[in-house]
Image 1 (cartoon, rainbow, N blue to C red):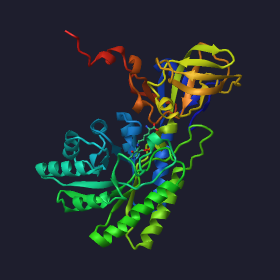
Image 2 (spheres, protein in one colour):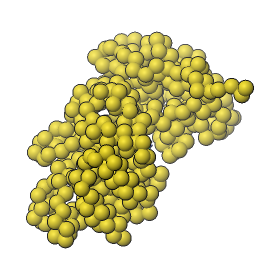
Image 3 (cartoon, rainbow, N blue to C red):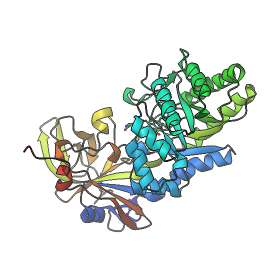
Image 4 (cartoon, rainbow, N blue to C red):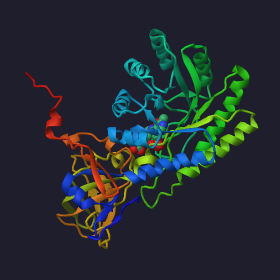
Amino acid sequence: YGTTGVNNKGHLEIGGVDSVELAQEYGTPLYVYDVALMRERAKGFKEAFEQLQVNAQVAYASKAFSTIAMLQLVEEEGLSLDVVSGGELYTAIKAGFPTERIHFHGNNKSREELEMALDNRIGCIVVDNFYELALLKTICSEKDTKVNILLRITPGIEAHTHDYILTGQEDSKFGFDLQNGQAEKALLTALQCPHFEVLGLHCHIGSQIFETTGFLLAAKKIVEKMEAWKTAHSFEAKVLNLGGGFGIRYTKEDEPILPSQYVTEIIKEVKNLTEQYSLDMPEIWIEPGRSLVGDAGITLYQVGSSKEVPGVRKYLAVDGGMSDNIRPALYQAKYEAVLANKPLAKSNETVSIAGKCCESGDMLIWDLPLPETGEDDVLAVFCTGAYGYSMSNNYNRLPRPAVVFVENGDARLVVKRETYEDLIRLDLPLK
Ligand code: LLP
């Protein structure tokens, strides 16, 4: 994984830093991010477009992991940003992210959120539904301003992934349906509004997708409509945003493809289609979240209690769980892990890693081969960089872990560990 290795103490090293020392210095659970790997992933997407000489924007989907330092890194790497709430937008603004490179998503943006976006001269709003079209029109006319928009289209594609992270299928809460005429009606409504600059169309078919077929099919459906709407309504989409969703390798069972491969296949398809329909090649935007940060994150836990159910299994508990990584409980997501203090030691037992929350479903990994464990052991769970910290919670009033960035042998604390004080900060007494 990335710049991980084993140092001369026999410890897992991340970005040139000893993970056991990180656990000692910053405490556990601890999210550790390999900065070099995140930079490499960002460059991977950008270079793929550059090589194909296609005008493109790669917008990091900040829902995967959003903090001030992370967004500053995204800005350093020259990417754009996708936000889905006032909170994510606020974080971006506080990180000093250029607002003209921010795209705003969401299926129920509030008036306050839309006003905030307009007041900060955001690059583009991805309009999801008729309610939002009307609300945005009202706000724009009140403020006498104009805004760039994309229309979010639901292409009716079933991607192969977990049901909860499917988004482009026909029966979806997101977007204007292509099938039943909603999308065309939305386009006509938007084109009539003097406050909108309709840049183009957007779709996102789901997340953790390994096959390119779904992306190609979505592109085909949308380019066909681009042709139809050019003929019928003289509308020429300058931008085609194909969303995010590129899968990553969590365990040996996963066989992902490289960012460059996704991009190359998608571009080839769009080029062919636009030539076939005599359309200008639109600018291609994508919105990767997981594939930019997922495998760069590792969570370190202190090993604690264990329980043997004779003849059945051994449970080994760690000092975190579904509060810092809800993905196993929510999506049956699978992870791999090693002991950070002896990653090369031979495994001689199979244990199931339990979290510390009061919930039987709080299991991080089932049936993990490990060497015999003891009190000083630190467990390193790989690939927790996406939707780990960002979906963390205070269930059982567990404070959220700290986040550390490591690069070239240096560690930097980028999110402080929550304290018990933080937990009651907003509480007010009964009387
Ligand atoms: N664009 C849109 C419109 C999205 O809805 C999403 C993710 C992305 C981009 C980024 O997708 P990515 O490249 O990260 O797959 N919590 C779930 C994932 C939910 C994804 C929601 N939308 C998980 O932990 O697997």
